[in-house]
Image (tube, rainbow, N blue to C red; front, side, top):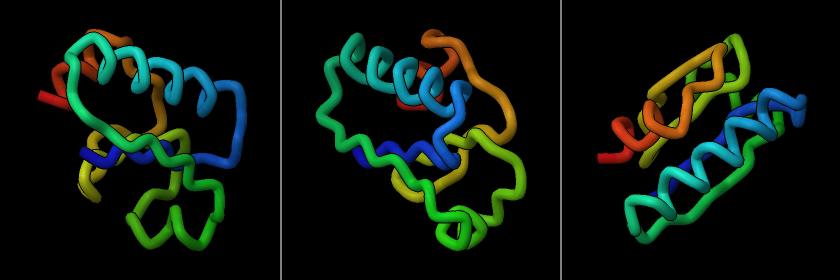
Length: 76
């Protein structure tokens, strides 16, 4: 599973990355965590508001930081 955090590196982006890592570890899923900070790459996902979370190339949430429990639901 490929988990991508889309954002420029703001505190919310960091929190989303931490939540995604924790959720994936809690579920015991094999994953690759990638931080996408290039604005042109972010726009290729159709995202205009960060932070955003993409799982296997599919954007799951935009413009907010979901809780660990919410992320777990997106990864299942």
